[in-house]
Length: 237
Image (tube, rainbow, N blue to C red; front, side):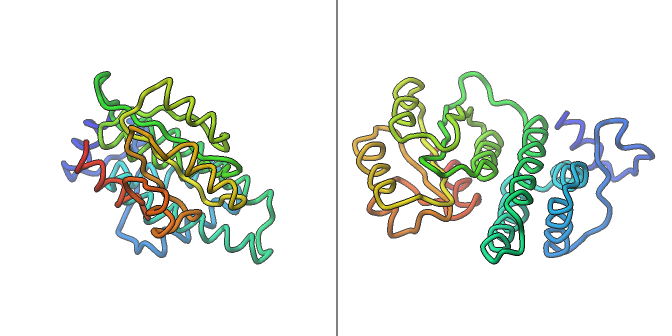
C-alpha cells in the first residue's frame, strides 16, 4: 500500500476516484493553524470520519508521522486539555475526542510498512494514573516509521508491571510517556523502581516531565516532541 501511495502521488496525476484505491484526496496547501482548527472542530463535533480523512490523507500526500504528531494531534490535544481546565469542554467531549483519535491512529498504523522480524524492539507504556493513550500511540507510530518493532505494554500501568514487562520482553529501548503524574511518590517510584539500574536506554516524554527532572531520572533522552524522539532513533537505531 505505501509504495502505491508514493507512486500515485509522485506522478502528479489527478485521480477521478482516489477512494477506490484507499487514497484520501487532500487538495491545496493550507496553513498548519487552519488544519489544526479543522481537526479540533471535527473532534469536538464527534465526527468519526473527518479526522481520519485529514491525518491519513496528509500522510498519503507525504507528511511524516513525526510532522503529523508534532503539528496536529499534539497541539490539538493540548488545546483540548486547556479547554477542559477552563471548563470550556466537558469530560465526555475530551474522552470522545481521545476515542476518535485513537481509532484514527490505529488506521494510520496500517499504512506504515511493517519492520522486519529482526528489527530492534521497543517497549512503550504510560505509568500510574497517566491514562492518555494518544501520545503513546503516536510514539508507537514514530517507532514503526523508523523501523522499530514495538511492544505496547499498556496505559496507566503500575511501575512494577512495566518493570516486569521489560524483564520479559528484553527490549532495546523503553519509551515512557506521561501527561500527568499523580503525585511526588509516583515520580519517585518511577525513578527508584524502573529507571535506576536498567540496562535498556530509557526515553521519556510528555507534560509530566521537565528536562531537569529527566536529568535526575538518569534517563538517556528527554523527548520534548516527536522530532526529538526521531533524532534519537536515527542516532541509535
